[in-house]
Image (tube, rainbow, N blue to C red; front, side, top):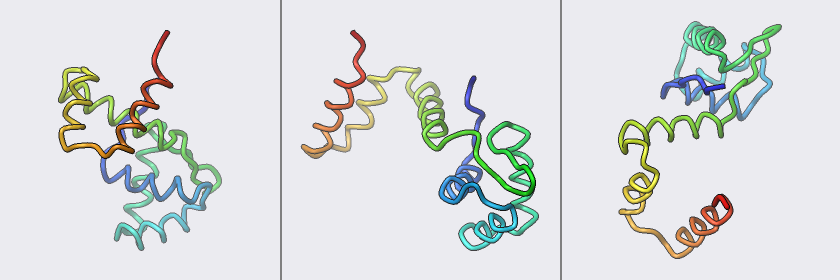
Length: 119
């Protein structure tokens, strides 16, 4: 199943949800007012929209995520890589590393590549 698209403001909402779930919708509305400056109506609209797309579930006024933070991040990176780098992972990594890497970052990337290399 493909991860549903989560737009930037929705992602900020989801970050709050992931940190506090399961959470009552009234409490989530308070958190969104504090952290995002949203009205209660805006929060409920986003809950409804994300529920319709299969990102969250709201049952008995309790909201939970159906998409994990890792799934959302992977989908966003995949979209960026496809749109900006024609789906080329080496081109994506080359652009990402142009800013320079510390020795620790380079070692961590080597470890990740080794752990995920096929064969």
